[in-house]
Image (cartoon, rainbow, N blue to C red; front, side):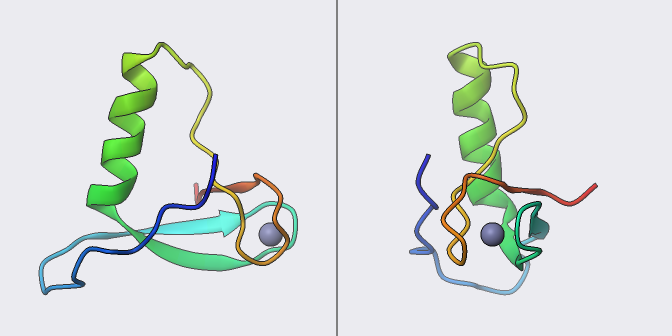
Length: 67
Ligand SMILES: [Zn+2]
């Protein structure tokens, strides 16, 4: 899964979710709308795994939501 593009305006009120790469420790905040859409899609196709994104730093698919 590729890293989602941040095309949405970071307008006030957008909730951000802390993400962290378990491979290299890179951290970033992902807008909740972006994370939520992806989670809904994965539930729709019956994927039971927690969502992982490609880390923009180390390029492993190990970027996960921080616990
Ligand atoms: Zn990484």
